[in-house]
Length: 314
Image (tube, rainbow, N blue to C red; front, top):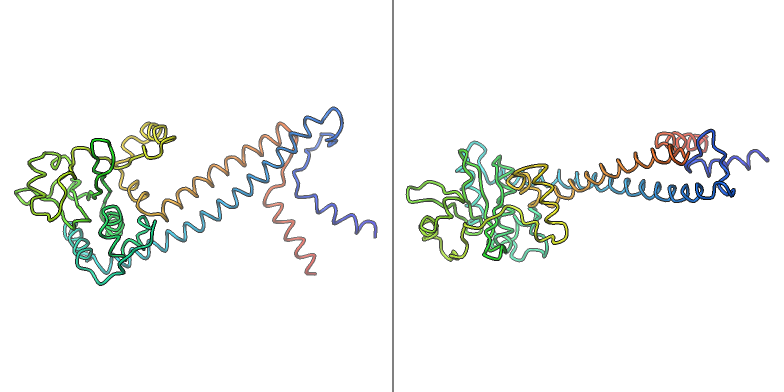
């Protein structure tokens, strides 16, 4: 009776970080009060870090499934809109034609969903706004095998006036305006780039026949990403990225990250898993080398849980 009563108490404390062999284990003596308090803090941080890591893993799994379903949705949409064997120019035209003359759509889109392509593709109101129209175009273009990125047209205060897309065709990033369903062309019928459209004469000629086009949507001040909106960390983040990855903001992958919520959430979740995993490794090292505490490993906890389950079942 005495041994069977003591066994549950022993199991109840076996998941706590254990004191490494060779230490006294007397945490309440006068000589070890400081170590005992540090062990208590370590224990709290250890379990909090493990909880956050579990939540991050769950978020990563959820966002990976979300991104997978979004990709499948876009692939099916793209297959129905864009002929697989067509040229890049024909693919761009097919997407714009679908946006201009596609099937009847719901009118008013949900608020705050202008970065979710499963929404922007299905609401007429969102396809009329430059930001969400560009979102729909970039996601469809990516699914159709095109390299596309967004381009912000800025005013003299560096605020966004308009949003267009750039598509890589024959080594040149040509300008596509999804909101106006047009590809800008010069007098010779050739596609135009941002640098060419920065010329006022070329810009005036290219937009002359685009109904309702605002002449303030000029191409002399542009950006692909505006981190200045994040006032506190925007400049340090840009500086760090410029140092680590020169030309990062010109990457189509960055545009896609900004234009697809599911992908952005998945990347953030994976970064959290990575850093929380590093934190866990660092905490284990600190506990074992500085405090003499040896946390129970996950595989040992799983093994004990399985043994307890089998013992209870039998």
